[in-house]
Length: 613
Image 1 (cartoon, rainbow, N blue to C red):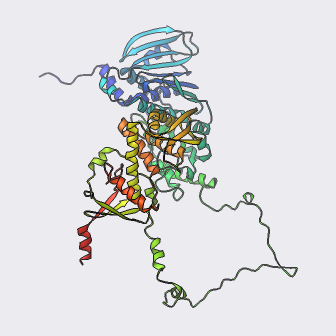
Image 2: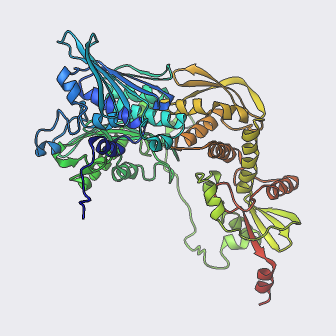
Image 3: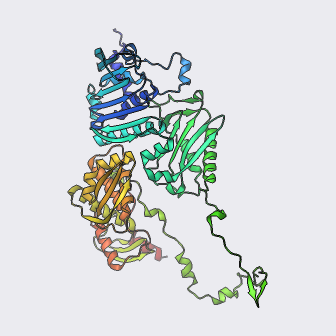
């Protein structure tokens, strides 16, 4: 019987390793830019084509490599950082050439041109699928220039599963922003298909945040700082007014590396209890410094998840530091009696017959014999039978939560929801109840229709049809509105300009991630055009992958949610009838696009059974 266990060829082993490190083009950008930072670069240029499919180029002015180092850097397990096992627990850098290069070259065609400042000539190396094709001495500027071409060219299955160009570009921008934020003393630039998307000069941390996310955020940040034996932290958190239901800018960095940490994020959120509406989140940009031996950065292939030795104590420090910052800047709700902020109020004196008399405290009079529980109490004698109606008006106040639409979860959810009952073919709208529900008489019983959700369903199908048929109507603005977006939002907007035009938007670029809104979809009177556009863009940014149909659904739902009638809005009888008629003409009147119930049917037999007692 033959042996069945054998060693894999290096080319296959490298491709397997690459599957953990190189998941998509943004993974390559992350590794190469981090390597440039570790090489001491003060200027890093990132150039990509076709969302990183055909080209990813990273140019830096770091220390460069010798001829030997340049060739050795592409070998497996080659590194400049680790010489013994103990070094794994004392890492202060992120890459420096080694580790990822072997994985990248296993699945792409790579060209490297590099030179050290003291060398007369540099080195040019061309590799393809882990195989060396050429190596030569060339004239080159100091630093390194990596070109990664045709990613996954030798693994068609992996290449096929790459997302759209826009989606891959969004992911690249996300990685670019994370690295640029924490390395604010380095100059960065990003270009796509020859068009410059970002130019970030070296600056302070706060200015880097502003340069990436727009000038508006500068007025929303509170500085946080703490220095303890366990943790050193600095950065910024947002004012309560900057909270969002979705798309909050939340960034943690530890020892110069971006990380996700939901547990620590809850510590920040805990500091805002009773300061922001439930369900909303505040932005934060917090840089943590911890002794490297007390953390483990190798629990995840991309190193975005980090294990801390003293998580519970760090949680308490973060909470205390954010609370202290909010209190120091008078963010917490409190009465501020700073007299410098108020005009002086003159003292009033009582004048009588030309003489100044001292003011006396007001006297409070009350009836000590009054008992509110006695039937002959004065209030009960004066009250009439309408008192209970006023009390009734204060009950069952419609929840403000229905003024927003839950996050769209796709058509799969809709198909899995059971229908509540067949809707009546003949119906008669009877009345509106508390500005929230519409009573409708049907063949099978009494239907309760949630008016806001019904309107959301109607508008969703209207705007979805406009997107597919590209026939939205525009309404010009008297004065164009300016929208300032972050880099990621700007990239997302550029990818949906055709869809927004189909809805009726007319948007032009002002440069620097700013846009002018010249026209909006007809019929959105009363809505803030900037807020509507930003909501749509943020919805798109949150989706890692969307085919065109899901993109249309996302945009249509975002607009419908903004434009649907508010809870508590009183409707005329004609408006009630129109709303019900249009609802029952939609493809799925029972549910909103995100799966919430619109209609509840109270069967005739239930009504008869109740009154037969």
